[in-house]
Image (cartoon, rainbow, N blue to C red; front, side, top):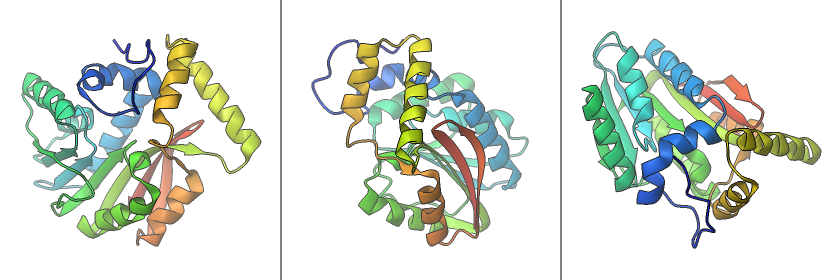
Length: 234
């Protein structure tokens, strides 16, 4: 169970061994409707791919998205996952093995690794950790790695352009975390550790970035307060 922030952290947030061991619990309690987002993402991914299509999961962490896709696929797909944390990928390998599933896992920086040509690329709560100066370059790289008619499925934490509404949404979200069992101390310390590490855009800023990179249509397919999921079509 996630107890990472029951004591004051000594450094900025990073996906180290301590976090990797409790990451699935952390996500399920920190991201509202996380399982539904994975389920929807897998369903839509499989609508846009065919037999032997490549599907790439960026920031794959413990492989939950890959496992969700593999469990639903009624035909053979080639699954790839990239993450820069060896600790996360160790968890992913163990989970895939336990389920009898296969995926090619790559330990590396998504800004530097080469991507295979894909019909679907996924990034769940990953772009928000990429520095703004590099973010649009990464999205352009994603666009160029997709085959014609391919899709990019992306979920992000977002901010509101109206400061009052943004405050209210953040406050509502933090109260929801308390209902999940996190103490005010844990919530405060995680926010402190994530400061200048997680840098969210607004919903409109995300859509504009995707369109600037060439995606012909971008649609929101899920939203809960300040968490949004998009599908972008090439």
